[in-house]
Length: 122
Image (cartoon, rainbow, N blue to C red; front, side, top):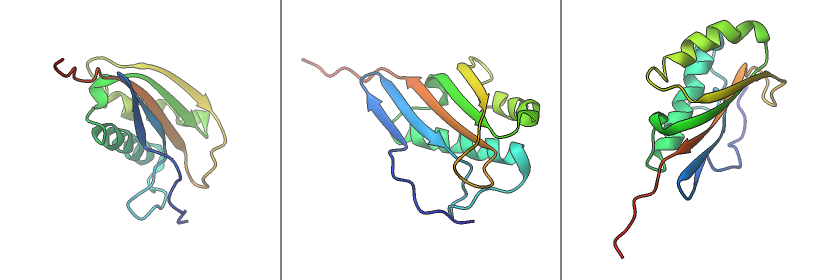
């Protein structure tokens, strides 16, 4: 199922913090990625990474992530895939079971990053 483009900012900077909107597992055609929770987790994390890059940051600056899963039985496979994105210093995280607003989506991920803005000379 193809959905219309979302009406939100993928990431916004507020001082030294960057807030990343919930990212769903869409492909380039705005269709839900097939292949189960691992493929959908990778898609979401790639979208988070791209959103952070759009404001000059990266996953290494993430301090908090929030994850919604539609099926608690997917937790172990999700967690294994997710761990690959945060090997050195995993951020704090909450993971909950929830109904998502897009049919076929098994996961949604949002994030908060702390990445101080460069200070300009005075």
